[in-house]
Structures are given as structure tokens and as C-alpha cells.
Length: 322
Image (cartoon, rainbow, N blue to C red; front, side, top):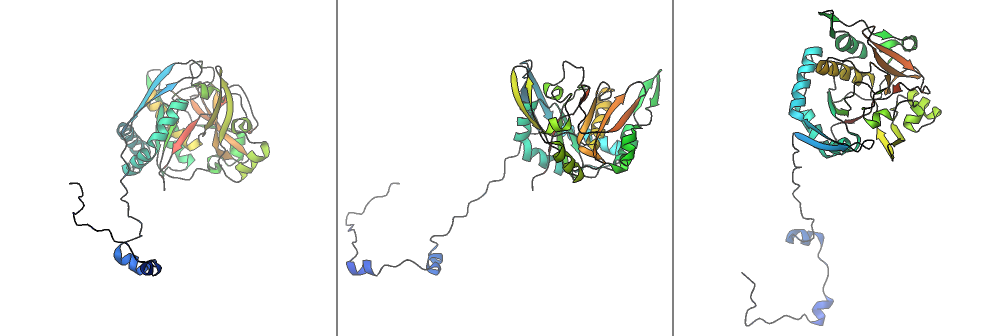
């Protein structure tokens, strides 16, 4: 109902004396009258994200569109069984859902930019590298001559052993729950259909991959600090600035076993990859799969090494926000 002015309304005009005596209210008076305080705003709870995420990736090399989707409930169910079966670990569902909800839009953006089409869930309580090698890598069983046989023991290169072997591996990444986005390609090298951002890492030294000089790289390795992936690449007719993460060997061991369970194949049977988040002495850890020897090779590589078959698997990890 609109406000109506009374018929006998007379506006009040203050006298000069009253105006002179005007003063601001004291804080106590203002508080008593409920004046001047900040209004308490009700913060609405953040909107919960969908358990299903769909995004479209336009390949800058071929201009082809690829639809990519994840269902976090299905992913959680797979990894819950995976860790329980292989490592006897339980996953905290609430941690994973929090990471998913907090980073939902950013994950979609990364998928649209880089075409990440594989999701990994990594718990905070993974065992040491030696145990991961024993339980995830060396327990894989292949069909050989119609019979199931375990793969051969992992080969450890001399430089890797000089750095302390698995016990000497250092990872800047602190143990915590995370969701990792990466690419599903079995091989980067000699694979024309591989994701173009993966192919762009081939033949580059760690310095070229990171944009840092040799002194900076050695300082990061010595200080156990992560080496970023940040470089410019020509893809098709486009110049692309690539900003991502590499893998640690720990994350790669999980990925290698997940890939095998889902496809019956091994990552990097052609060419090999290194891990900007795993160090051995002053070197960077790398791996490939030897199909003839039926084993994983683990090596320690000079950061300056640049060969056509050597690349770095790109990824992006997401953690629970503080």
C-alpha cells in the first residue's frame, strides 16, 4: 500500500539555535539505536557442482572437436576398488568430492584448453616408491603363450642406482589427496594421433620445457622444488603457450597400473618419458616400458638431455582449497 501524506501534515523546520547544537551521535548512542553498524550479510553456501563434467576440446593441429566427459561418482568407484585391491588403502570420499566441487570450473577450462581425457585420483597415503614398484608394477600379469605370467622385475639404470635407487627418489609434491587430469595416449613418440600438446614436449630438454636456465634447474633439484612446465610451441598454424605440470614417478606408477587394468597395454612402449617432479641425485627420473623384456625401465636422466623419443607427460593436479 503506497504511503499517503496526512492532510494536516506540517513540515518541521529547525531553528538556528537547534542547528548550532547539533552533534554527531556517540558510538554508544548509535549502537543503542542500531545505526551505522555494518549489515550482516548472509553468505549463501556455494552451489554444489554436478557429478558429471562435460567439455569440448578443439585440437589446434587438426581443428577437430573432441567431446570429453567424466562422472566423478564412477571415477571414485573405480579408484576405491583399485586402491583397496592393489594397496589395501581406503579412499575418503568427502575429500575427493570437495576437490571436485571446489575446482569444477577450472577443471573444465583445463580440459577445453589441453584436451585432458583421463582422470586419476591419488590419495594422501601412498606408500614409498619401492613398495609401489613391487605392488603396482611387478604384480602385473600378461598373457604369454596362453598363460598368465607376471612381468619381469623392474630394470633400474646405473645412474638411478647411484642416486639411491627408489629410496633416493625425491618428490617436491607433499602427500595429499588430489585429482589429476592427463592424457590417455599409450605413446607420445611416433604417434601422429597423439595429443598435440604431448607431442610438443618431445625432443626438449628440461630447460626448454620449463623456460628456466641450467642453474635454476639445478637449484630447484637441490632444493627439492617442483620444476614447472612452461614453454611456447608451434602447433599447426598456431603459437601456443603451454603451462602445465609434469608427473612424479609415484603418480606415473599409479597411471601405468590403471592404464594396464583398463587396456591390457603399457604406457610408453615406444619412446620414453621423464618426470619433472621426481629427482635422483642431481638428475631427473624417467621411465619407459620394454615390451621385449616385459618390464618397466627406471632411469635417471641429465636435465639437458634432448632426444626425439624423450618427452614429458603433461598433467594438471587439483587439491582441496584451504
